Length: 326
Image 1: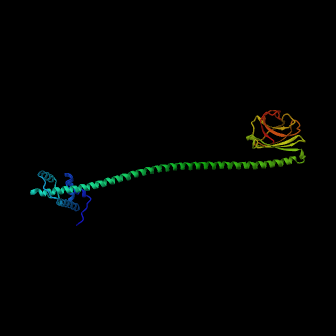
Image 2 (image 1 turned 120 degrees about the vertical axis):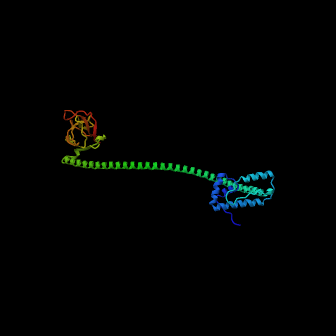
Image 3 (image 1 turned 180 degrees about the vertical axis):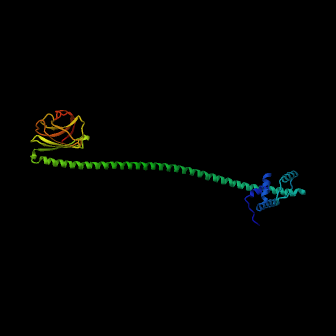
């Protein structure tokens, strides 16, 4: 027995054989039959199968009314093309009955095939919907993970940018600190050199004098504007006179003067030692002699006073003390 011929339009062929096409569909199908030999063979096999099944069924003579209805129904089916079922209404109605039962059997087979395919399609649809729901759920979870990853990425990026900024600020601060330290080292070197020069100069001044009668004092300041100033006093208690040397002193207004004072514990107030004027570079070297004798020069101080006509300055200090010995 040969294998049945299969065709992708097998269902259409069954609908054609059992009269389930309207006039337009049948006309189009007939045109396709003329150019498709395989489709024609499928139609012929379906017709032969339907006829064989009808012959295998127990034969019965239908009633006149049933016979009339079947014949009327079958005659209404157009019979185009090759390999058609031929309905012959013979005496006793056996031929019509065969065709009627064949159509019914074939219709049952066709309906069963359609039902099985429909059931399979429904199961496939349910499975597809389930997979679709799982895919949607997975996509939603994936979107959530992507959003969380983006948030963490943004946070990490912000943290990196903040760290980079802090690193940059620290590098700038370090550079400024290093530069300031270099300036301080240079200033220390300069002051050390200046002190050595002053000491050498003091040594020259003090040479030939009795050293036990000489006092040397370095004046210092807590005022920011005068911290770079250098002031050294060499005091000769025997002669009641001394030498003051100033460097890097800030220039004063035209109505102000520097004035030197000697602090003697035996006196009620500091003793005036005269006005000190510096050049534009803040340098001065003067000899001084207090207005009265000093028993003990405990400290030396430099103040800023109002300029007066008296070359010795004001008798009593009223301005701020800017430099003083320890």
